[in-house]
Length: 112
Image (cartoon, rainbow, N blue to C red):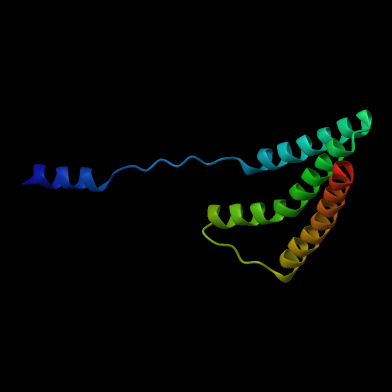
């Protein structure tokens, strides 16, 4: 009888493995890639490359707070967001949107 209980418990206690991806290095890598492309575009005086670099920097500025708070919410099984957190997300999204539109205008100017 004890053997049957041990087998049932062994089946019920299956281990789950989770891979936790460090999110901060991924966000930093996206920003660095955008800045490098922007610098290369400015050095070579290519509007398309510069516009793409500006677009990437703006995109990273806009999505970083969403990814960061989402990651924290998943990692900590929910978080309490304050008014200041929502304000930070909003301000960074607006700034990122302005930078994205600047980069897109520069890219469109190149195609015409």
